[in-house]
Image (cartoon, rainbow, N blue to C red; front, side, top):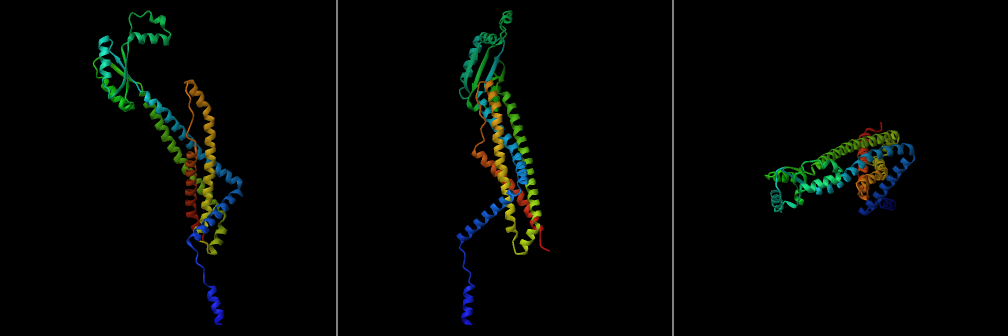
Length: 327
C-alpha cells in the first residue's frame, strides 16, 4: 500500500511551465484563433465581401479628399514666395521724385529684397503689345499710366500678414497713391483650403463612426448566431476572455481587409484623376503629379481601419458576451 501511495503522490506532481514557454504557447493560441476567425469569414464569402466593401468605401472617401487637400497645400506653398508689392505713384509725380523713392525703398535692406521702377512709357508699350490696342492708344492725348514701383520683400515678409504690414508702411510715402499686394488672392485660396480641410475632418469623423457601428452590429449578429455554442463553452468552464478573442480577431480582419480595399480604391481614383490634373497643368505650361499615396499612407490607412474594427468589435463583445449566461 505504501508503494502504491508513493507512486500516486509522485504522479500528482505537476511540472512547472516557464515564462518563455507560456509566452510561446500563448502566441500559438492567438495565432490559431486568428486563423480560425479568418476561416469563419471565408466560409461566408457574400456577407464578408459586403461588409468589407462598405468599410472600404467608407474609408476611401476621406482618404482621397485628404490627399487632394495636401496636394493643394503643396501647390500653394510655392505660390506664396511669388508675393510682390506694386506701388502706384501719384499722377503728378516727376521722374526725379520716382527715382528718389526707388533709392529710399532700396535702402530698406532688412525688409526689401529688390525694387524696380517701371516708367509710364515702358508700361504703355507693354500694355500695347499685350492688349493689341495699338491703334486705339494712338488717339490718347497723353500717357494715362503712372510710375509703378515693383517691390519684392524679403523672405520674412513674403507671408500674407507680414506683407500687408510692409505694404501699409510703403503707402505712407508721400508720392505713393496706393499699393497693391499681389498675393491678396492667395488668402482667399487659403480660406478655401481651410474650409476643405474642415469638411474632410467632418466627413472622416462621420464615416469612422459609421464604420464602428457597422462592425459592431456585424459582430453582434455573429455572437447571437453562436449563442448556443457560447452557452456550452461557459458550461464547461470557458472564461469570457477566451470567448471574446475570436470575435475580436474578426473585427481585426474586417478592419485589415477593409483598409486594403480602401488603399486600392484610393490608388485607382488618384490614377484616374491624374490625367485631368496633367491636362490642367499643361494649360499653364507646368508639370504636376499627385503625391501622398505611398507605404506610409498605406500604413496609416491600415492603422486607422484596424483600430476602427477593433473598437467596434470590443464595444459589441463587451456588451453581448456578458449577457449570454447558462440558465
